[in-house]
Length: 387
Image (cartoon, rainbow, N blue to C red; front, side, top):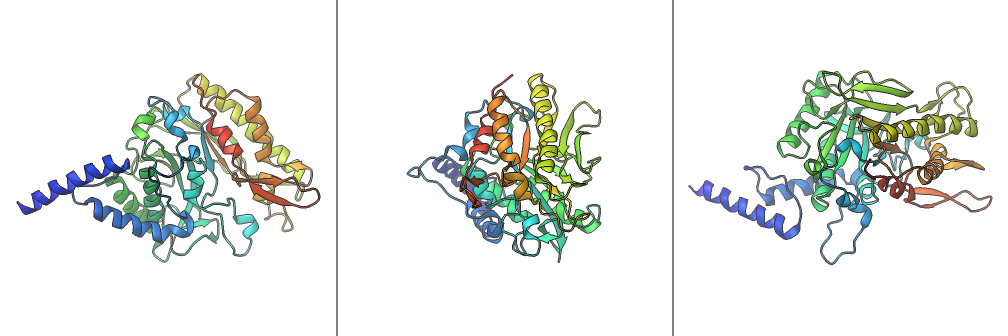
């Protein structure tokens, strides 16, 4: 009897907590609000090197429009008919080890990226010392922040911004994705976070934003025995600018993908490499916009990220930063996408994963300087006009 009374009391407390704070909380019958918050804070602390600080906003805090821009979108909008500004290798922002110029792809931790308007995160992991840790290829990004910590942290951010949703792409980037121990560890992560209803269950391209608000949407780039999230692990083509992967067994809907990321053959030739990448990216964006306007039902995914090939040319110096921001008198892909957005209708494009999207090159004469800039995120976030 006492246990039932306590359970009822905790349920009332949880309900009042949600009403008073405006935050959503995935509380199970066996986990009360205080226990949940304690666990969340533990994950936030352990994941802080990659997550950054969670800003808990009160009524007196100033409004950040980019932290809540999805609030204005209609509830009945299908998930595939939204533009999601995203970050490629989103956790690779402060790696200081060997080759860091080639491994870093961002300048902000994950939660700050979300505050800046990012709504899709490309995250790469591997199993090391019994933990799922974050990597960019061979580069270990942090020795303590685990996949489960980051998922909890992203849920924590959504509690503060319950009208938003986040696409979370997870991929094994080092080691064998089919290894039994890797899959067992990921299954434990998904079991824990799924029973707490962190994720949109049974997601399809026709799932509406109403169903996804306050939740994570999994883009699964790892093999798994169950149909969880958007499954795109099979048939992913390496360095291809236009391919598709079936999202259902009947092959009625597809993920349409551009992932032409490795420029081979003309090392250190910034102008040529950026020209080739621009063609692949802009052509795919145009196909995406046209298909979504005609209600194709597919999920469109574009990677604007790219790099020169160091394997065939060890002296290659076209890094992800150069590709994104440009060099000398050659404009980077980010600047070219700004121009593209301004020249095209403000209609949805799907998911766009980008590098160094929160900065730009500063016009400083012969000196190379950078400055904060989120205009490209704003431009993509604004491309939401219905067909």
